[in-house]
Image (tube, rainbow, N blue to C red; front, side, top):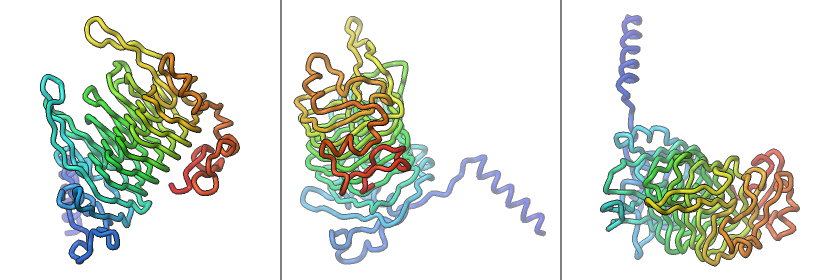
Length: 385
């Protein structure tokens, strides 16, 4: 009898494996959902499981609006490995959405429903989140854990081994953050792969518009077609920045060829960037490359350790490891790069691992930064992370 049960069990196991059958977590509201003051700042919705996270992503009623903001607190680490099997292989559907409709390759219209709320990750992890939106010829999507943030506050989120494949605007935390959104004390590791439809790609945020990022880090590997340069923006933290970026760093890999690329930000608009650094493990390419635009035109792809350039940015105390990046300048824009270079400095690796390199220039190594040869490969790290 025991032998028969064992054989039947093994047959079921093999059948499940061959057919690719997987149990799937269903969306469940937080345990405190029915409490009278749930969702308020005093009693935020408790996100303690993958089921709760799925509920948040599939319940637009709690994303809020300009008149009402809901609050969320993550209370446990969340293993999201099974999301790779969700939605016929599309994986996790981002919280909120923005969709771009195309005609002849150009955006002609769009629809969106942002997340207006306050999400505190409680310094807990979300592990192995998988996002792979269906590719359609007439639709492009903005993707990340959140698709679109609008006046939202995101803090204390630690995304570990996230995987994202394709999207119009891509970031591990958010595809786009706009209109006084704030992202603070958050980090991401994993892999993001853009394709020929990707316009703005950042390790944390694809586009940060009139918004702020502080005390964040990325060790994301950013990939794409290494042999065919593309027209777009790629940055280790942010694809396109118009806002402020402070006390943050990138220590991942960039293997994606774009017209506008940088170790920290692809393109910087009128923004403040202060007390940040780049120490990439790998950045490609290490020189300007030509890219054909139309039958008779060609542009040069330029790569700066910090950014390709920008429009009147205020850059102060932003550093890069010129050995690991393999690039001499923080910015690589002809004629005017010298003006921006005054706020950046490139150092050899050993200097990037000395606290005095940073403290002499006003970095706060009491409350914000710390350094230890056994942590973060000896580079400065954020106390809050």
